[in-house]
Image (cartoon, rainbow, N blue to C red):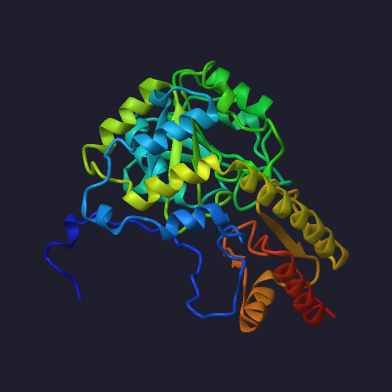
Length: 354
């Protein structure tokens, strides 16, 4: 069926999110959620949220959350932008900063929302092929462009791109906005973030999320840190289509979680330890595992098809992520869960791999 008005519709190929099974008793390792819920302190705040406050509009400036983030990162409040998950923050960034006729640059294997936003906002783009080890080639970004976006650590590969190489890209691209998407940076080594570079580079924007390390994927909280002029431009765009992006619960709990740092660091340490143990277990069973600086591993088996393992695991109520994409169609992305969940995965693999 066709309609007379269809030629006026903006048609895009949408992003495909990870499957969200609605059953109980599944091992859900396909969307990189944190397996450890918020701390007891945060649970108390959840239980004590004021129902009356939900009838009122939330603070459009998100002052409480912005202030806590600014204090945590030791930056001025004028350098912090918040949004409904880092997807919202990144979409506003694309809409705000990528407006030239020159193509923006990002990797061929990276967060698959980037080309979706580029198509949606009619932004020309060029993909830069990762090398044979799935690493970014710095020289690909030392060329004329309309902007650069790099996920670091990268997803779905999990590989960290050295900060010294990012500095080379920033030095070359001073007339373009460079976005470093640090959704998984908390799982990398200390000092690996590029936030400390924002004083040196006024064209640098860092994006972060509460969905991974902060255990709040269900509340949708993301933020950006950059030069105050960048943040002002982003707020101008945000307020042009929605003044109240952050809800009351997100502002209240997001502000509290930032102050709950001891619990946060403890959870990160647990996930890192489980990641290293599980990576070795996979290698012992014939998997190639890419070096991970995230809360997931990206692995392929030398004999068994990733798609076959994916389907067999799903029958056992174990969910991985499988991408039917050139170059990575024999890899599985496996979120790091609790130790007992990863042990169950190993038992499944031992039953499957003969």
